[in-house]
Image 1 (cartoon, rainbow, N blue to C red):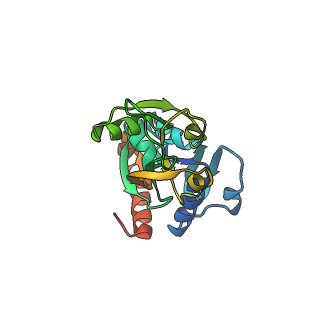
Image 2 (image 1 turned 90 degrees about the vertical axis):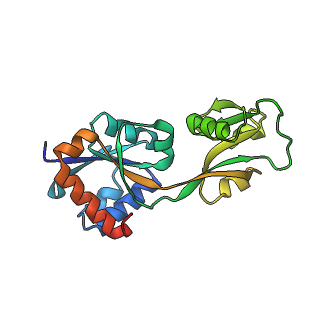
Length: 210
């Protein structure tokens, strides 16, 4: 199995866009690839194995070497700070991290509460702004926090802004732009450098380089 390149990919939108990118780079992925519910998908003709994971887990798999390569959002990379190489901006799944809240609501003067699934990113951002806040870690439905009085503000991913709008929230501050990145395990980069360099080169041609 040493000649097999293992790629960890997140389920959902990023998976679909990444699979499309790989096909454009002339990787022959079977048609049923997109419809499969399997968590491990082998593509023997390309000597590739795919591991399908939750977005937050991809970098963990790559760091620990169970995947040679991974596709992870920059939001995950900023939050997790894993020991991996970030080698290519794939320029897919574009969105941004933002601070949001209810419009016209006075923020608590002393240590306002901020709900987020990105506690490290949020803490760092507000520290840079010179603001002292209390971070509340949530795993989902972040938009609910201001509506039920759990938090004054939230830090979350914003794509179209529709979810914020539907819940009566407004974007207050733009933190940073997010795209998906190709990440590599440092040991794999030494052991499988030809396969990984070929992958990077083929994808770079499709996205126009970085």
